[in-house]
Length: 209
Image (cartoon, rainbow, N blue to C red):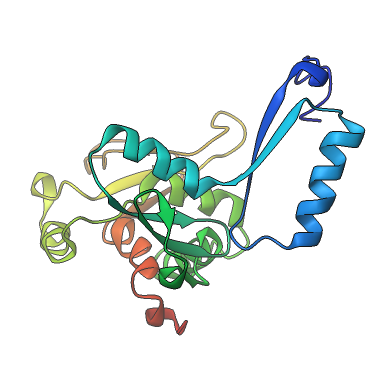
């Protein structure tokens, strides 16, 4: 569909293409992908490149750093790739089997235990994660903020769940006052907002080495 006339009405014979691929992609997949673009779509030229190379290139153009570390977090894995003078330092590349899927599943378990059974609501909780969670710059400082009451706690939020009638997609909002009438079903998110992404840095917390 991406290369259909409805979505991308261009003449591929006159169009150079860039396609990103994962690190350590299989040679057979690379060959098949190249064959499809040149033989089926007849593109003018093709560059296969890792997305992290593009991220590092852009960063190097705007920052005067010889050494860079790029973190590429996907659905089921996270790569940490060091670069020196624009070149990947392959011996330093690390992969952990933690990505968006693990974070979403862990958030489902935490919310189901503490508030509401959402184990069958993967799609919705994935949206909750993307809308609500963030990587803490100072974990213990944020823990102290999350302990505070009322307006002194700047982290706690309510997430309004979709009812697919008047609310098609959930959204984050400030917590309501006790005297306010709130008809929508909500999840209260506090320490979960920054503790869930910590699995990227401490995967052993959920038994991943």
